[in-house]
Image 1 (tube, rainbow, N blue to C red):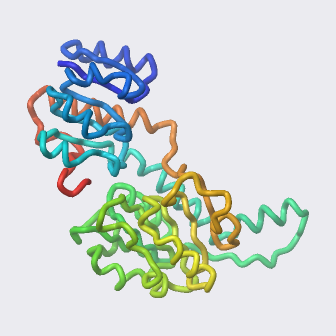
Image 2: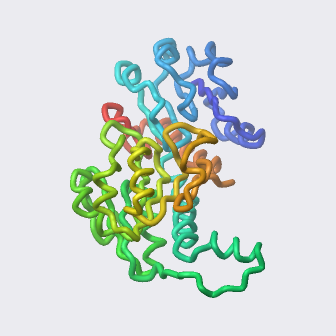
Image 3: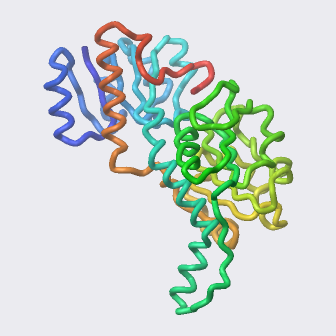
Length: 317
């Protein structure tokens, strides 16, 4: 059985995998375009999912399973994968710890005026006239009540916050006081002192946060986007922030990245811009490989139904 990895792995992981699975032949390459010939014979592909196109899928005659070593899937050629009935799994959940910690850090930064404190310190300005707001007792609304959203809610519970999650099923999710179906977003977005988008990019989520939703939000609300940039209609957010329809926006993702130097977000006092780094962690690859190895064990045992994070190709997630 041949396994092709276009994920860059440290030498010690390459050696470990080769020894652990002697029945498998591993080919390690950094870019799929350099490994096209190997892909034609590979039964399993380990990839970040950004370099695979329909032509690759159609040429891979033996391909049975793709493990995407990330949570994002928007660049995957789902039509071709459906046609060839290829099993796809991903590394959903590996971002939950760093992204939840980032979210809480930004909530505290805004509520505890960290930017103002830093500025005052740099200017040697001893003033106590800085408004401080507690997280205690506040309400957070999380769009995308999956692994990341659940971890955010868990941390928020340490601050005695009320947690409302939004998903597509309305099924209960750990650490949320209330779960609301996504088509009822407008009914609860106004409850949030903090509104966090941890949504993937799908037809249903694109542009889900626009001027109508911003008008429903509290004027003291803080919006945080750690999911995908296209969940927000940017021109509507600029308008809402300019008219003080909400207090602040913390944006880690954007429709076009890197964010253009002339973009208004850079210079708006009520916007915090970070360069798509909320999920960065030294533990990223070890966690992704743990899921891959668990799934490889199931695959080799013929227990396909027990593999972690299977993707519904027709839905794209």
